[in-house]
Length: 376
Ligand SMILES: [Zn+2]
Ligand SMILES: [Zn+2]
Image (cartoon, rainbow, N blue to C red):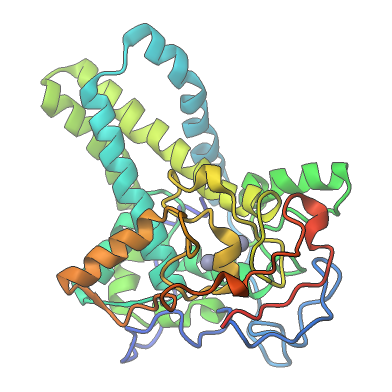
């Protein structure tokens, strides 16, 4: 979750050709452009050799400080759904979880999660494919239902993450406070949720100018608050209509609204925290992103995070044999239907020869070595 933004995005002149999101934009990590060898997570300054790094005359990295009201809203949206998640088990035990609740929960999770993974992330942040106009808008709307903030802010934060991954300037690196147990514990909390609560919003004019220049996306951005209300209200309405009862309204809101949002938040946030600490690292990257298989199903393939950081614009993250990637399958379906084109699939059977099998696989020490992206 980032900011539940109610305000309009800053106006920007309309620009043609905005169907190539994420490509050649500031802050977008292009594989193969890295300097080999010398950087270590957390030890260098943003600035010299990377796309998105600070240069003389560069736009400021952050938006102006946020108002108290925004921060209070943020706390509410972090704490309330999580409290609902904690309460979910005993409530299910007492009331039973009906098939209607489960169906509403599943549909809501599917739509919002794919909106984030396929829409916000692979398409709008990284430009892994091009989409027809209606699908572009639909994906931006679906992602907004995850209540992880406005689409432009989400994309700006994520592009900054790739530009400075696990270094100064990364909005949510778990390595921010060092690699000893205490520092890492604090860093994990920060990467998971702490960065949202003491928020430094990435400057959208610097990191997402292509989206600010798109009137369709700006319109979705302006309706962030309405989409939040819809995201919580629709499950309640569905529960009421399907059961024709007030308890149905309540349980629809609880399971399909609060619990669904909380679960989706923690799965998304785990990509930032867990997937930069624990897991396998078959590909060389400049950061500590790791493939964490237990989250592959729930995250629709986003937890193949080492592969993603090695080749950020690739539409498929689970590129190795047996790696389930639901988002890639959905993009494949969209391509079959003719709704998307120019999909950047990995070359068929991208050789595991690209993998650095000698790299240690688990835990914080494994990327103390200097690793360099050489995935192209
Ligand atoms: Zn990452
Ligand atoms: Zn990414």
